[in-house]
Length: 267
Image (cartoon, rainbow, N blue to C red; front, top):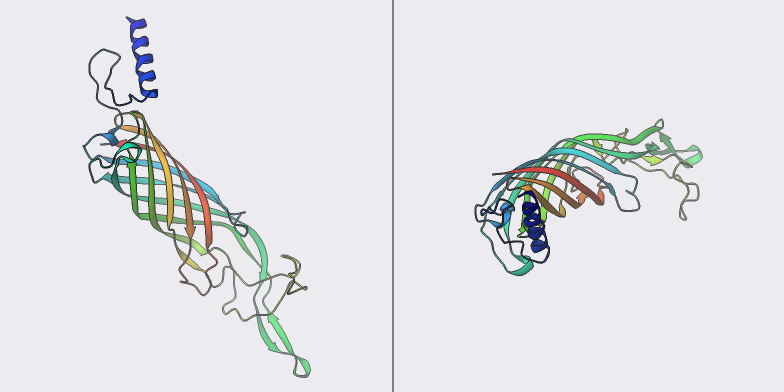
């Protein structure tokens, strides 16, 4: 009997790999429900926990790293539509990350204002050097996630999504501050000394940015169903972080890539 069951399981696996993933089989010989709930017409809810981490991909933000922990809640709103590989359904979801951190490079800066110099010249008055960057802590919520779940196979259900969120940090993010300390960031072709004067308003770290940022994003991923009501979730998101000029400066993070590992309960 045990050998027969093993043979049946191997036969089911081969059938799935050859494209017969929708056939309903069981190691006991009785009919069994399809494992992948996305393929059914029950329009399920799914709730889960997830961890997400990644890095900046642009030249100026390549040293930025991210780590966050949160939760996902989604509801399949439609039945199955489409044909072939595109067949699937539409899900609306939200995600919240009460733990959010970004690890950024540090540098020394100064704030300077133009001041009259001797004999009618121009000089500057500068603040004491201060450090910008380091670790930023905050919280993030993504209240709009529009996801298309592909029908997939008995075990796998790929998805793609567009989303928009809001980020709060305990300090203005990303750090902007004042002017670079001479020699710290090096000279440029138009400024061999590596230093210039400017009027920057308030003095202090992270000056002129904002503690509030928006996070438009696009992602792809897959659910791997361990049972009809449990899945391990993998994803990758391209995320833009910008304050939409809520501060005087909006250095932003044009692009970051963040990877997700989660576990979901379906009902």
